[in-house]
Picture 1 (tube, rainbow, N blue to C red):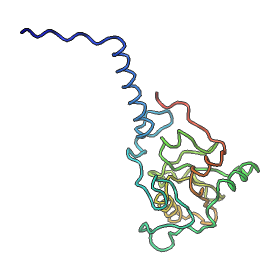
Picture 2 (picture 1 turned 180 degrees about the vertical axis):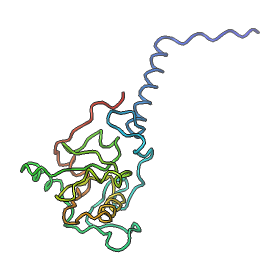
Picture 3 (picture 1 turned 90 degrees about the vertical axis):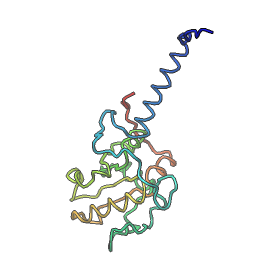
Picture 4 (picture 1 turned 45 degrees about the vertical axis):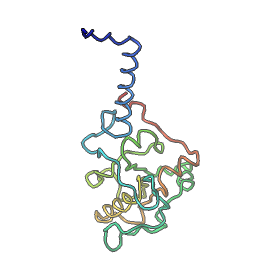
Length: 191
């Protein structure tokens, strides 16, 4: 019996395969944070999401009111008065306070939705980007989880920041979005 050559794939099948490949590539850019999106700094963004932290099995910030032991040593626990709820932050923004907001989450999270006018300042390179965070006035930081909150808090204190000026968004973007407050989305994601 002679082997016959396989029939070429139909044009519809070829289109489906191309579409699947494109969707897969875009999904990797968005979910994996592999860079390639306008405004990213691929060298500074980790290729893996941060490990889940206490309080949220999905990597969210948990309650934010207390902190677990992260090896930061004495004084690394974040006082509850340093947390702002989503409602408190929204009130501050609505009052025209102009309080600067720094979003330390992965770019892939930042791009999909962040507080209007927040500046992307990734946690993994926070120490190298301290020049962009003011020493002389109050500011807000948004983190992905409590482990990063603890690390960011320690970095700021170790670099001479006044704890009274550091504010953290309690429960991160989860509460902000759940309350229906506005968000900005990056429009050029490389797809």
